Image (cartoon, rainbow, N blue to C red; front, side):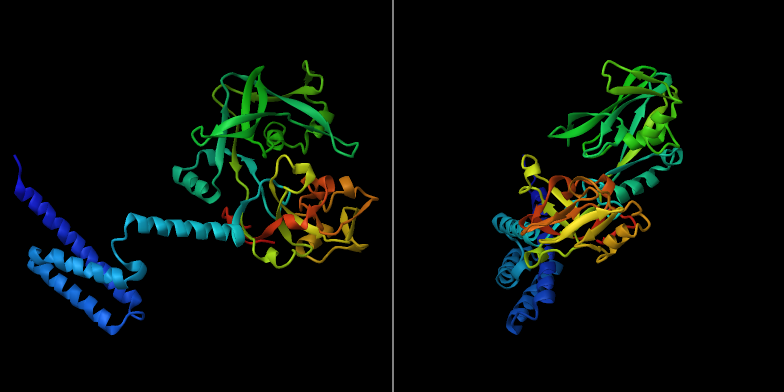
Length: 428
């Protein structure tokens, strides 16, 4: 059994809805394209709209469909991009063109870039982490949501299942081209699954102990937890070397004689957080890719480059950001933590000047190491550049792996667009 009156009502409702939509579309065409259309065309559109509105008011369904078709054909002919009823093929073509334009912009004009490490701090920050205070942990859900939006942070909370004191493995490392020894918390490189298991990525796995029971902490491969573990369990010390030298903490060697198990004497109860911290992603920048096609960056400007043509990174090409400090034929050397070019102290750029004068935030200046160990100098060859990180004591740069070919420069950082901190805005 069928119910014709139900189908009829539905059909009439659909005709009315489509007619109203068509009238709205016609008014948009008149509003935005009237300067492009002849008066006769505008008059035809207005006449068709008037006739359609009259039929809608009179509920003259016998004429509505024909009038709608007439108006639709008129709009398709003269409405341009505002024309109604584009087919799936036409819509697909529009999306494809938009996609090509986006790719062209990314390739030739501007591209987003995320700072991977803290080698350029405090100018730009890479991934960092901070302990979550008890006040932050107890904050309202709305405060946490706003914090998440502002920084896109991710929280890690390791909870104890037994009582005891915290012990941490410590290993010593000899610095490259130096007799200095530092102490740090060792980690194991592992692969973890991300995005619902669709991708695999490298990560660091740290192991600490509570009364002999193992607890593991996973962090991104570019993020060291050595300092935050020091801050959490040995507050007041500036380094693990200082902790070891103090002698107040029990130290036991395991089977691996290179690793020292340090009892921090920090008490933990079952159910408490052993460590709770948040991971903050690096600054996100827009990179100007077009200007470097017309000129090389100037000394003192920060640059983004690919490591494809650098022999040291041939197997693992990456994108880096550093500051350009030397162009072809320039001779560089570091003396008393200051950088000299061709025998003159470099003060040609705001950040270079801050580093050489050891201004606030840049008190350490330039660290002599690798090719620029104190007493040695480097001359930049033709078609190459020399780059250094602003955080000189913690930067893996040209001092260690050599020169950057001019052709490897991808662009100049233009603006920090995320996160919303005091660094937001034009790049330095």
